[in-house]
Length: 217
Image (tube, rainbow, N blue to C red; front, side, top):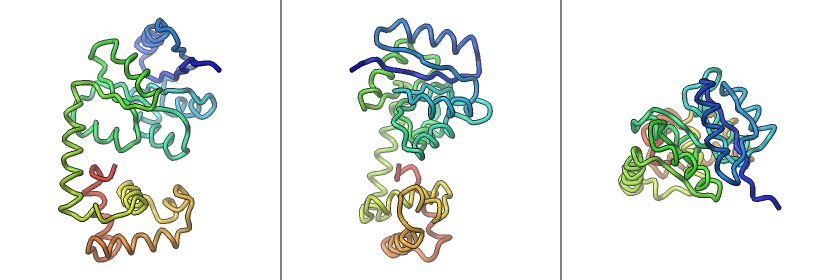
């Protein structure tokens, strides 16, 4: 059985993309099997080729890196997604985590970070550039506080997942399709969540989900 790690690289700047490919392929055991210049093409290549890892620029035409990552997660594809970006702020980092990514690498960081990230996520781990690693700690602290302060600890894993999907503005029908259950079952879960969190009605539930999305991911 081959231990080769296959990679798709997506970035709308050809010079950067080709340079990244050459840099990655200098590392034994890593092979770039395709390139894309926009998010939509990247997603189609990911679905067709099923690489071990997809390295995506965040700001791409057609679909950004977040949108591609969300689709990979929604389709349950066995592909680890890494975001490669210039954005060092906490907002973009949290959006990346919410999208289901496994790695977040800053473009102006050390070049070897990309290689370390690919190797780490390929084996099931997660990798974040040192420039943003403190944001993960902030996120964990907020989540721990929310568990007790807002009652999230009382929710089952399924209820937490439904609440997170509501924060992504999914309908009961959308959630049912994603979780493989009926819309009626989703509505029952929503009612239970409202009861546990002392919320009145769907509007209050969605508002709560949006306010606490970062603590649910």
